[in-house]
Image 1 (tube, helix red, strand yellow):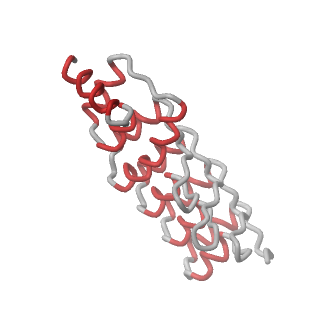
Image 2 (tube, rainbow, N blue to C red):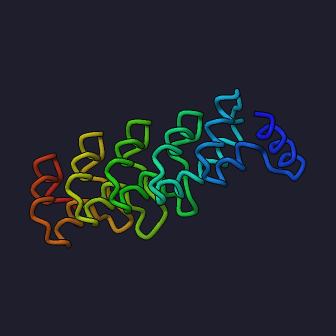
Length: 179
């Protein structure tokens, strides 16, 4: 324990807070020890750490994701494109992390500012991942959400010629007359 506290004191003198260094290092053991020894995240640190959730999603690091989310890091933290960790998990087609994020309050209807402002459902349809499409819909994703092109998930499924997802979306209330 002494070595961890000593290290944090040095880091703080260099201008880094312990929680930010933990997030940056992606070190589950140090992170866990920090929180178990009574360490806390300030609101500012939690916001800054949110950016690292995106990296943890890409690295498929479920343990670190859970630990940071359980200690106050915003599950809906935006990256530079205003995408959320859920957007990234969908792009990575990682159903387990999609479930983890949803179960911790991820916004299934969040729009990113990347090309055309898609929702996670748009991304799942575009990736043709029926399991994730169903999961998102089952947790309240808007089947008629429009991106900047006024395109809906049904439009995307039709463009991909994915009959299974087209049928799923229609059966779940997608507007076949959406323009």
